[in-house]
Image (cartoon, rainbow over all chains, first blue to last red; front, side):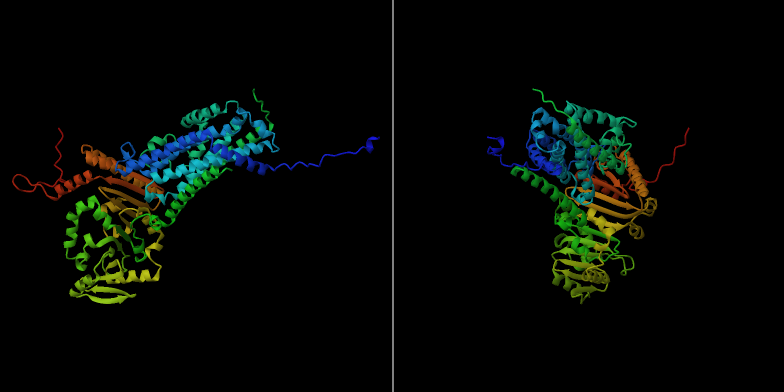
Length: 288
Length: 346
């Protein structure tokens, strides 16, 4: 019997489904990661960090309602709008935004490596950079949805009723500033988490070591920080009177809003692109 | 996306949207437009013609019911009620019992004869009683824009019963102008963007005033020397929240940012001087320390609180100054502002 005469049973034709496009893959990773981020142990940490300003605002409101001045600087009474500006700058911009950027940004890829689950992600038929971008977008949405409502609650608790209307535009700027700050810090620390073995330590050193010191140093060093450019966008954190002297030394040189927007966008796009490139090229070796 | 994730996203988005919506509407129409404030002058402002130079509002019910108001009623109200020239005396309206709120407007100079302001009082008024009282004093009853008006000839006062709980009192021409303005639906101060911008900033208080600064100068409401020294102020507003004490805010808008900066410097200097003066008096020192000076662009704001203790102290000081002290012989002492002759240096 010749080979050709043998009956041939061919397996049924199974054409592989087409690989998803970059953005549909990003959307899928985003959807998956958003739920994971919101209901992870980090959420408890985030709730504590963001609950503190709200509790502080409630205390300020109660003290104010009882007829006692909540805050005085050099004997001068500090009003609700000014207190809100101080909370925005010192608690949100200088602490909450960097700390969330560090904890969430560095974990985008590093957590998958640590948990040895990155293999499962990278074996999917999606571009590797889609994993990073999807997780990054989930981080931005997740943190923004927690940070911005927290600021909104603080605003309504601290700012006097009569000042709510006139403060609307500054409130919009504040919300935009925080969202942008979260995005920029997140992108930077995503890069750190992608290329470094100890990203959390690096991130904390940068955010609470280098940036704090650089902002107090004269010269150009502060231009290598993110907070330097964020301060140029803060509309009202610098009170006109009273505690000016306290903050004046820190804010002695403030770049223009255009310059700040340019450099922040540059940092965001640049670091995210570098992180995506690193994820595409890097070979992750999972230790046993 | 799981159900709880979706729920979280919805709740967080709702908090953001509600907050932004509230602040946005407050920015656009003011908080009275949202009905957040118990009382407002919004309806009354529709009667006041555009170009009005001074507008003031008092939530009389709130002030009278407050602890401070109760304390001050016996001292202040009888004086105004007993004055024969007072519009309330003329019309038989008892401000303590009948009135909920008052809006006072000084119309543009030349609009009507005389300096009498237009007063819009909201409250419970016994119209037949007021009418009969006025008619017994020689007033005439007429109608304008379908609204019943009583006009007294000597002194020239018109009373218009605008709504069931709203009465206008003032020069008859001013009352008629108020009715015309309301009927036309346009041309009221609500269309005056500059004035309304300041009204929106102060309207949450129980009492407030917004004025064109040059009108205050023209009407000699400020000492001439002070008016000349002050930088170019265009608008002035004051508001006060009266409860146990008083929380007040003074706002000024200047011609430009430089003038605002100068004004801030002037106030800062005055505050420093005041601190030196009251250093030994804790109540007054607390008051001076409560002063909060802020400002942005061409606006300057000064806020301060007067707690009940400080008010008592100030009242006592006022009483001391009102009663000139006398010497042992019964002769009045030399006025305190006469400086003793300088001692020659050795």
